[in-house]
Image (cartoon, rainbow, N blue to C red; front, side):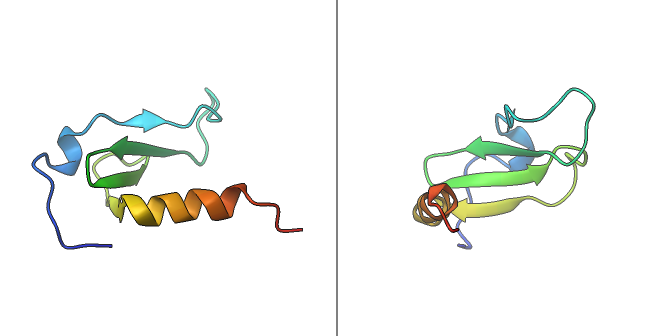
Length: 70
């Protein structure tokens, strides 16, 4: 993670909820993409904390998550 700031505050970003989220709520996350980072927050608490992950870190996470770890 980085201490760099984006031009928009986390509340001003365009947030998207996972396509796997159901209409009945539950444990969901939302993500917002900028030129330098991916921001992640709890969809049930939009005013709560936001995790900021640099693009390289996000790409590594997605690669790891998509691999079969049986």
